[in-house]
Length: 160
Image 1: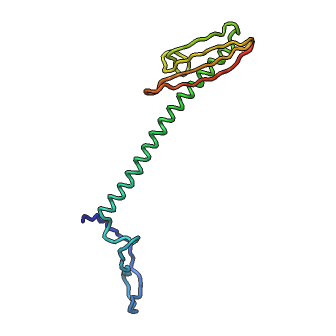
Image 2: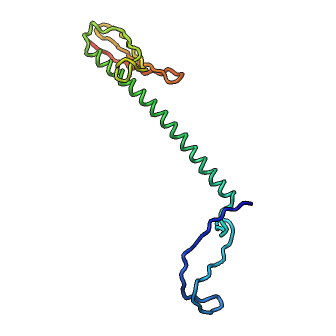
Image 3: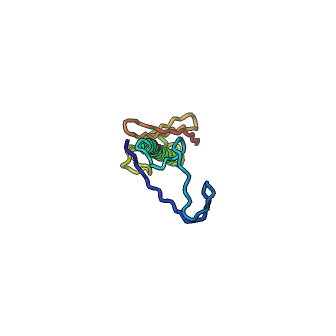
């Protein structure tokens, strides 16, 4: 069995001591014998098995941490897109509220960015339904994430 040995060099100083048989001497105090067993480190060093177990445990910990970081990044990107969609919806609702009541109609915008400019991944559409003097407006923003199409919508009412 391969054994990796780490040499331990303790600091020792000369001192007066009394040995087990009662004689007094000067020199380096002898260390008590090291007993090998569970929980007690053998003076010969670490075995290959102990090193492999330690490396395996560390590798599992690092892989778990890496997968968590990847998940956090994905969720952060998803939250950023939902926030941008919500902002686009709120901007359109505010624009329609500040429009003359009689000229509020259905409409859509394609390929806009988070600020409403052209050239982005978002599509925004709004539908207007009239019931007397009240118009109900539903604004929907859709975007594609990989193979999935996601959407966010809000509804508001405007009276004359």
